[in-house]
Amino acid sequence: MVGDLVFGASSNYGTNITTDNTLPTERMRILANGNVLIGQSTQVSSEYKLDVDGPIRADKVVVNTTGADFVFDSSYKIMPLQKLDFYLQQNHHLPDIKSASEMQKNGIDLGENQTTLLQKTEELTLYIIDQNKKLEQQQSMIELLQAQLEKQKEELDELKKKIE
Image (cartoon, rainbow, N blue to C red; front, side, top):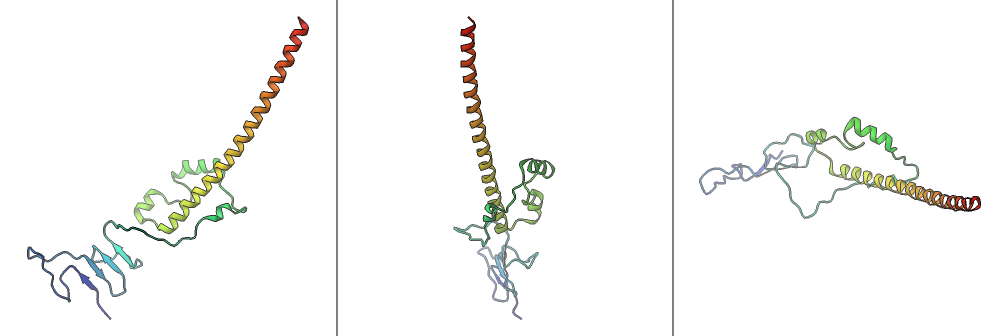
């Protein structure tokens, strides 16, 4: 079996000396199982093919995901706002979204999280559409009641004229 391949530090492949005659710190390691470590020499969990100790910068990251179009399916049942309000009061985070402490402890799966955030955005869209329908109904009712009120005022004015 092939051993680990180490870059930026003393290894079986030669010793790299810095300009001040000290050994540089390890920068990258390719493990025998194919996993790549950057900025660290050991891996806590071997399930990750790339393990980086430090920030990562890229021009583009593509994460495979399923999307959340199921929210717009007629069989999808959105949580009623009252039930959502109760859930938020009890849990202090949205349903299907991990709590902040869980995210801090375990991190997040970007693909899964992106799909869930899209689901929540689409649910918000459904809530807004529903609220807009209710507002339109209320506006129609207000206009109807205003017309009735105007008619009653006119009838009252006619009655007053007859009485005088």
